[in-house]
Length: 204
Image (cartoon, rainbow, N blue to C red; front, side):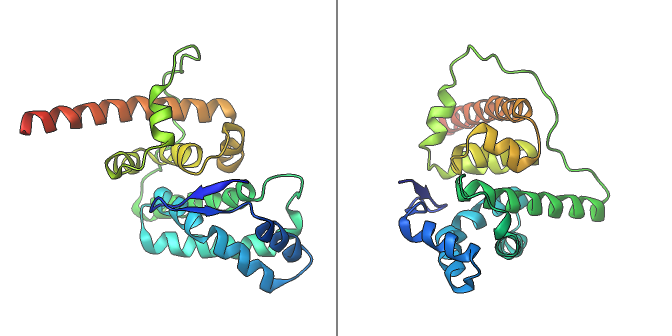
């Protein structure tokens, strides 16, 4: 049984028998049962959309659209797989579309899946361990300042608990690209957090 940590740090069981049964019922056309699914994942999906769009109103709209799309396409869901990564993929694609539409309106491109220095697979990743259990507002404020692609990858992998393969599927990129985005994000966050700590020390 898995538990989901929402943006306020509380855990919600999103792999309960009730949720799994509701998904199965929704596949059979039970619209009311899908309400159980929405209740189970609403905060998590909204948090994901908010981290990607950085716009509360847009996050609400995208999250709502994601559930509508999910219900409309529930027959396409492979029941042999976990439900949340499938739902998150819909939300991520819609949020990415929102970013692209906004970029077109503003006349610039969305920074995201740039290909920075490649990670050294043999080097330990202590920051990853910290981020997996980190509820610090300071850290996630720094994450929110990352480019869209890095921000999305970090949120999906560390906050939403998706595997690299699932993150790649959700973002529509390769596993290698996800690893690169995570590597670059870790490097940036290490630098930002280090600078922040130094400023705190100097200010004290």
